[in-house]
Amino acid sequence: MPPVTHAHHSSAHNRVAMAAFLIGGAAIGGSPIFVRLSEVGPLATAFWRVALALIPLLAWTWFRPEGAGGRRPEKLSEYALLILPGVFLAIDLGAWHYALTKTSVANATLLANLRFCDACELAAVSRADQRHFCDRPHNGSRGRGDPQGRADGARRG
Image: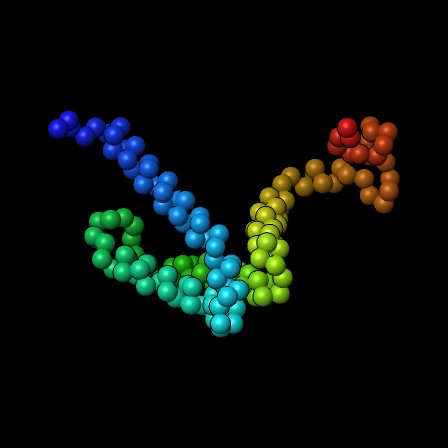
């Protein structure tokens, strides 16, 4: 039997990872249908999705070896920083589940993903150089150096 090389092990690992990726994507893609078929309300469905996922997550954290990585939180403020993203996820998940009951699956999912894009855009704009935005024309005035009033000089094709 030939020895197992690093390249062979890596290739097998990549196949397992790709299979997990595809199965996970299919499961996430089908979840809105199950939310619409649920007999409880949208917020209860969101709660139980997270609560049932918490069981294997807690088991994994309790039974992993001590040297597996990372330190555990020590102060209350560290726990609060860990809980805060979960609160935002709960709000997002609850809003998405509620939207699934009020509109189509495709529309609710599109709007949920656009909320994330809007948050990323807001973060990018807040860090952008403010001088760039001050150069734009205001009140219908013409921009500098562009006969059609576009301050950035962009041409429409």
